[in-house]
Image (tube, rainbow, N blue to C red; front, side):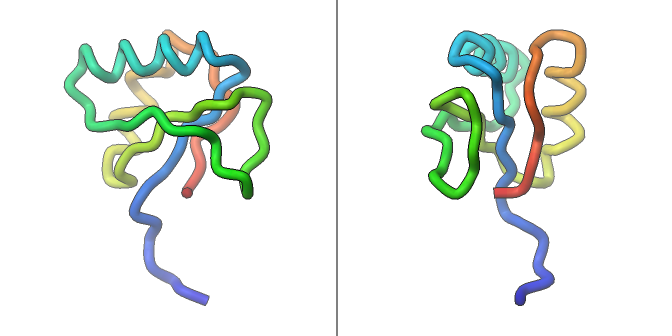
Length: 76
C-alpha cells in the first residue's frame, strides 16, 4: 500500500447542474480543474465530478464553500 499523497481529488455533486455551476466558478477564479465522468469505483447521484490537483484542495473548497452544494471532496 502506497503512502504517497494522491495526485488528484474530486468533488462529487448531487446533480449535473451543481457540477456545471462549480465548473463556472472555478473557471472564473482561474483554478485548474477538469469536468469528468464519476469513476466507477466512486458512487454518486451525479454522472459528473470535478477533478483537480490535490495541492489545490483548500482553494477549491473555499471557492465552492458558499456557492455550490456538493456531496464531498475526496482523493481520486
